[in-house]
Amino acid sequence: MCGGPVADLRLAPGCTLDRCTACGHLARDLTRAPARHRDLAYGGEPTLDRIRLDLTYRAMRRYAEPRSVFEIGYGSGSMLRRFLDGGATVAGADPDQLQIGVDEKVRREGTLHEGPVESLDPAGVDADLVYGIHVLEHVADPVRTMRVARDLLAPGGMVQFLTPAGDSDGIQLYRDGWWMLEDPTHVRFFTAASLARAAEDAGLIRVRVLRPVLDSLVTDAASVARRLSPRDRPRGVLSSRAVLGAGLASAPVVLGARLARPRLRPTLHLVAERPR
Image 1: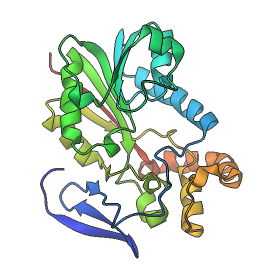
Image 2: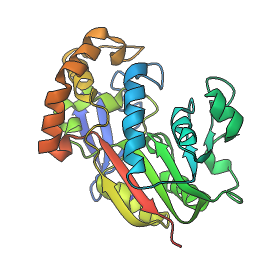
Image 3: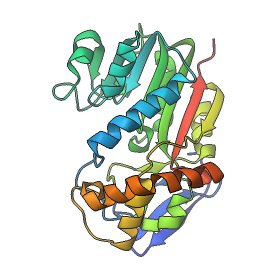
C-alpha cells in the first residue's frame, strides 16, 4: 500500500499472506492463503446482519447528519433504506445486485447504478456522505476507490469506510482460522496506518481511524471454531447453529475484552473529509 518492502506472514502451513514491513498492510493470494475459504462471498447470518447494520448506522450518524448519501456496494439496499427513512436522498453503485434482492423503496426512490463505482462519472453527484461497509478489502485498487469516493462528495463532505483490521490481535490469535479469511473475495487487510495512508493519498483530510467495539461480535467464536476444527465449510462457519450459539453466549465476554484491549476489535472505521 505504501510501497514499502514486503515479507511473508506465515499463519500456518499452506497459508501465507504478504505483509508490508513499513505499514503492516496485508495482501492475499488465494493460491498461497486459501484458509479453507467458503464457496460464497457472503457467509453471514441474516438476524445478526440486521443488528450489525443498525449498530453501524448509528456509528456513522455520530459523525454525520447527511441530507444526501452515496453507498459504494449497496447490496440489498438495507443501509440505504435506513438513511432514506431518516429523510436523506440516497444513491449507490454495486456491480452485482441491481436487478434482484434490492429493497423496493430504495429501488423506487433512490438513484442506483449498476457496475463498479470506479466506472461512474461523478459529475452531478454532490453527496454529504459517501460510505462503504466492508468493501475496501475486496477491491484491487483501494486508493482509486477512495479517490472516486472523494469526487462524489460535496466540498466538506465526509467519507466513511469500515473494513477488517489486519492489525487486530485476531489474526495472531487465530492464525489461518481467523474468520476474516473465510471470505474468498477478501484480498487485502488494512492496518490503521495503511488505511490512513490510503485516505491521505486519495486527497482526503481530517483523517481518523477508529476501532468500533460492537462490530462483528461473533468473529471470535467463528474464528475459534475454524481454528479448532480446520475443515472445509462450503456454506461458511456461521451456517452452524452451534457456532452461532457460542457467538451469542460469548458476546458479553468478548465485549468486555474489547473494551479493555482495543486491538481485539476486528474492524477499522475510517472517517475523513473532502477539502472545501
